[in-house]
Amino acid sequence: DYAWTQARPASAKPWFYVVVDDPDRTCRAIGTSTLYIGSIGACATWKPQGCTVYLPANAPDWMVEHEERHCNGWTHD
Image: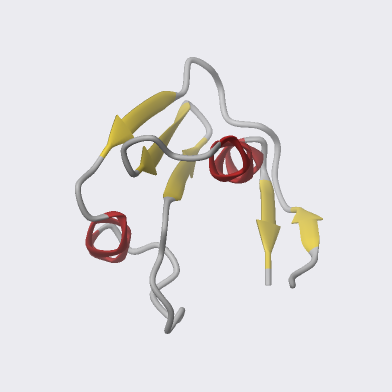
């Protein structure tokens, strides 16, 4: 469980979706959620000019929606 906070405006579109073999390794390598001790299933890198979402193959809808929320400027604890 975590609480969502609107931290910044939405990133400009289009957003890019990248399927990766190992989301945990990829997400840690790009510096997202480095303090998280569990396995990272997906992540998004927010920038004002665009957002990139890194997902496993056949990611469930809830996972895509979660990462898109990050692209829309939301963060969570």
